[in-house]
Amino acid sequence: MKLIIAVVQDQDSHKLMNALVRENFRATKLASTGGFLRVGNTTFLIGVEDERVEEALEVIRKNCESREQLISPLPPLGGHAESYVPYPVEVQVGGATVFVLPVEAFHHF
Image (cartoon, rainbow, N blue to C red; front, top):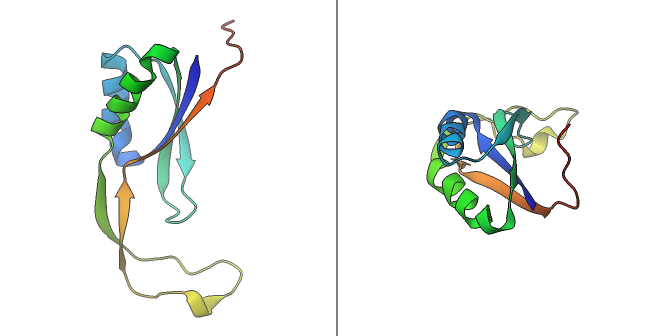
């Protein structure tokens, strides 16, 4: 068994959750915040049998698209303003950051 941890942009989370349920994957959805853009993300915890890992990754890949977006960076907390860029910059957002971890034991109480 594996644990898939997928961090996705909030605007992709509803679509991904629907697709996971449709494909009979069970997931726990957690609100999270990204450190770079300081915007909302959603973190999915998905327990998957070894033989279904690639199938789950494909569902994530199809439902979490990366895209370009203009953002206005927030000023740094605690100083170091010399590296602060005060105008909007284009960054790649969306997609998914995914970790696949082995599960030593699973218990459902």
